Image (cartoon, rainbow, N blue to C red; front, top):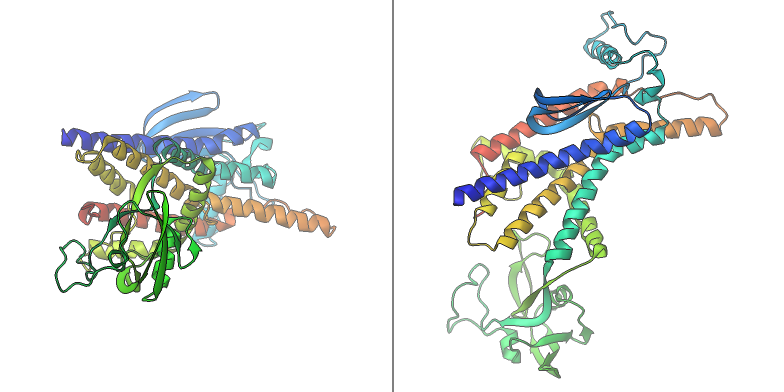
Length: 433
């Protein structure tokens, strides 16, 4: 049963990834076709073709390695000024120059008479932006819809200002699970006579809106006087005590400890459903976290490489590949001790988080990512606009082919990073226990 559930979790995740990839490519293909661009291929995966079927001028199909996808938009690269794009440059002017020339020629192998006005590079800059942003925007929309489903249908567990547990004694950090001893001092909450079910409404005269605000006030109070206003059975009461200083986990980094004010109460957690506004707010916070994670990605991948080499243990917050994410999906799904609803929510949130990351990652303004083409189109629009305002001749299309060396280097780095993460997920996987 456990093995069957593990396989089911992996398969569900794999199908979700494949659907996300397919919709990402539709996000490019649909506007491209609407703008008249010639689209010859739509494939999910890379490598050997497993299945394909042609409809009209476009071949649709599946490849053997389901780690991505692509849409062939004819005419991504403009021809070299004054040159015949169908002729490969033979002059010995350097490796990258020859590669660029070869790439230009390959672009025009599928161009038929009458296609000249249907080439991608001939689109106005704003249409190029729409086509190239369509893919990652689809991923962000998928992430929003999945998170909206979680927050709206299942809900989230939210701490309230109602006390669920009053700790009897203050124990050192890391020993919270042990019983109190005669040597342990009583907590300020116990000294104040607080009981489970009390609803804290104010702290030192400040009205409390939520649990996070209360925690912030307690921590900032150090060992100072604390006047606590609370409701017991609907009746307002006041208690006076002094908070104590204790080593507690940092709110910014749960792996670090800081000395802060301590009261000794735990919150009552309730499940609440939320609307689209809440989803938007949470997506904003998660997007910012994703941006920060992207900035740290090279360092994190280097840490995974050291874990593969056995130099150090793999960090719990290190990035994972699709292989690692699938493994996590299988482990969570096969955990029969967890409620079914929790396992389903985890799978959905895993797919939502993946789509959010993929969407943001593709907006990085470097080729071969979508963001590189978007940056080129925006630069083209700005350059043409400046020339128009200054009364100068139209500078023409931006030649993104000149940036192909950057694309080749980036593609190589992405390939290496992907291989490191896949190997790391096999030989040094992250432990969920």
